[in-house]
Image 1 (cartoon, rainbow, N blue to C red):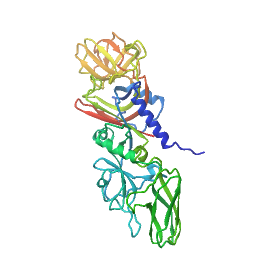
Image 2: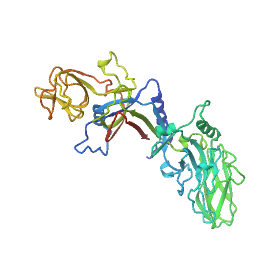
Image 3: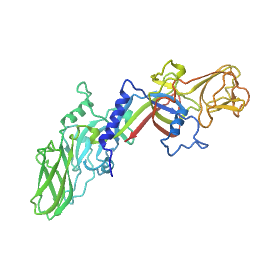
Image 4: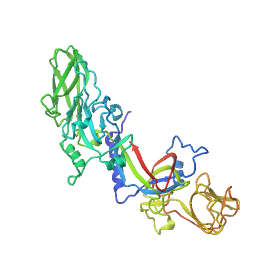
Length: 465
């Protein structure tokens, strides 16, 4: 048995994710963590496995979370470059097989290629040498002097490019508003509205035939109307069958759910042609045209963010990124099972230590400890504040330290640098957010990222279906 998950299914999953994130009842957060090194050389893992221990380790190491408010469909990025051969849009190939059949230009306009340029004498494919930008933003396709036919789809705004563009992806969306649109969005809406369902936007020659002394007549049959095509013959073979633009315009026709193509005349035989049908019409929904089945989440972490929930300064780094849905407040901070809804939050526990602290030794990334008979509580310091008279530590425990809890009113130690008494623990409190609550949707491990007060981390997470 063979089966596929269709593009429609993948797009539905992305749509539902976006709707779920935007629902008032849900809160999606970007989380960062893992301040301690991966290993002696701090080399990031080259693989990750979807198992419970992976998710538990992420939660153990979680530092901070920030609400995600920015999400979009994205498609693979292809920059227009002179001298490149671009593929025409096809209805029988996946985006991976089809390769570069659309481009984004330096003007941030996106065009789809409907026809390659061909050498009239040899039938060889031309490289693209005329920037599609020269065709403007008209709702009709335009043929450039290199023989390529381009159709404008949309222009990307600087805001959306900043949020969702990378070297590999560009954002793509369907405009659903009907009024109050910016010029950029109105131009896309015009393209969408001009599209007709069931257009035949091109033709595939699967057998060129032989013996043709002139171009055969091409006839299109199906349940639509007004599609017209013309053949080009070189050396006795049909090298291309294209939409007939000889009278100006591009007669794609409309209403075709299915169609067949036959030929007559020309003195030859063996030509086989298949129609290329756009179900909703090119431009009706650029997510379909660009075969977009990926989603991108974006969050910008600016300095300490919020009220200092994100760590900055010496030793303030992270090695993991994740997405959490609907985390909860710790039980100690609420009388009921309550969602965490603040914009930012800390997932680190809070240890308050009284007089006798030696902050010189208890620095960020140090391991603090406490001996309790035969047991030893240990933890990584993520942040320290205060003075030697009274200090507060944000900390986390993981598999490296173990999970023995600290004992209030007992002495705190530093494992090696200062093994003596370093103050008496006054309190050990829950974090602002319960790191073991909510759904963990995504985990990514990476090399260490150092955080500074003036720095901004523009984190873009792409999930491909």
